Amino acid sequence: MKIKPCKSQVFRLEPIIGSRKYINYFWSFSIFFGAFGFLIVGICSYLKKELFFFSAENIIFIPQGAVMCFYGIAGIFLSFYLWFTMILGVGSGFNEFNKNEGIVNIFRWGFPGQNRRIKICCLIKDIKSIRIYIRDGISPRSALYLKIRGMPDIPLDVIEDRFNLNEIEKRATELASFLRVPIEGLE
Image (cartoon, rainbow, N blue to C red; front, side, top):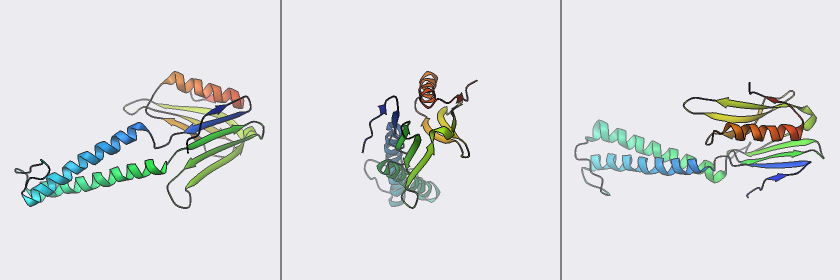
């Protein structure tokens, strides 16, 4: 189910993509094919034969071939995990801000089990501010948080793939003016 964004004077609905990002598809394919290659080379070293154009003439099964099999199996499981999270849409959901009813609903999908559906409801009057978090460095990351009285900060959106300060500030400013709360985090 795809949620369309909706903005008006009294209502806002923001869809959240979650784990279904293009970069996750890229990494799941890359990890799977790389791990499959490791596994085939490890099996070739054990059988001392050529399989699927992979040759392991110079690789002894113990220890190199066994380690390659282990890394191949581990990588395949990791790629299956990534596919599983993308199929389930872990982390996807929506942020709903409704001034008519005076409530904020934040919904996310989690892993299967008791807490599969994560829903947080609060009153707009309990919101203290919108907080912007920015981390520079090797893996830059930025996020918007909702600060609510008596609750820990709630992440509204984590922006990892595109680090654009103007876009983050614009989004935070729009949301803060809609909710009529201050912005924290940028000095």
